[in-house]
Length: 219
Image 1 (cartoon, helix red, strand yellow):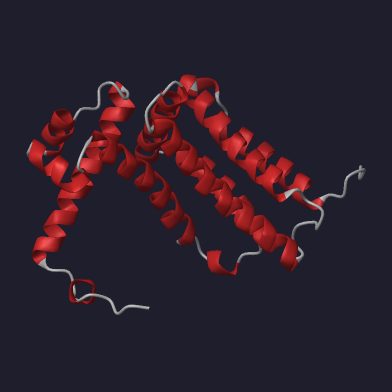
Image 2 (cartoon, helix red, strand yellow):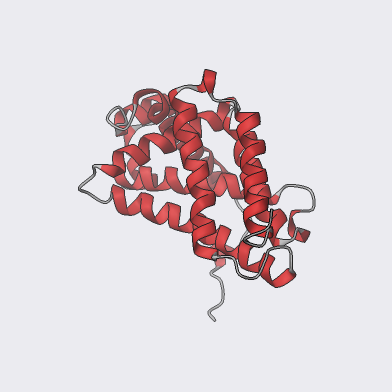
C-alpha cells in the first residue's frame, strides 16, 4: 500500500477551509434549486448566483452540471449515513436494530425543513432519471444500489447475530425497505397534508420487524 501524499497528511489550511466552504455553498444552492424549480431549473449560472460565487467556481469544483448533480446525490446519501452513525449506540446495534434505525431515521428526518429540501431534490432527480437517455438513470440506479447494499449488510449481520431469522431473503427484504422509503417519499411530496408520517412510520416499523423475525406460518 502506498504512503499517503504530503498533502493528504498535512492539516487543512485556511485556503482548504475556504474551498470546502465554497463547495458546500454550491451544493446547498443546487439542492434548493432542484427542490424549488426542478431539474430543468438547475443551471450552472443559477447555482453560482445563489451561492454568491462565480460561474467558474462551479466548474472548478464539479467540472459540469452532470458533475454537480453527481455530487448532490452523493451528498444526500453521505449526509444521511453520517447522521445515522451519530445515533447513540449505533456501532453496537444488532443487525435488526440497524435496519430499523435506518427506516426510523428516514421518517424522522423527512418532515424536517432542511431534510425536506434534500428529499424533494432526490425525488426530482429520480423522476428525471426515469425518462433520461443520458447518464442520469445510471447515476440514480447506482445510488439506490448503494443504499440497498447497506441494508443487505445489516440484514446479513442480523442473521449472523441471531436478531434476524436465518431464512430471510436478504436481497428481497433490502429491496422492500428501500421501496417503502421511496414510496413514502413520493406520496409525502405530492400530498404532505394527508400523509400521516408518524402512523406510517409505526406501521412500516412493525411490518419490518414481523418480516425479519417471524417464521412463515406463524400467527
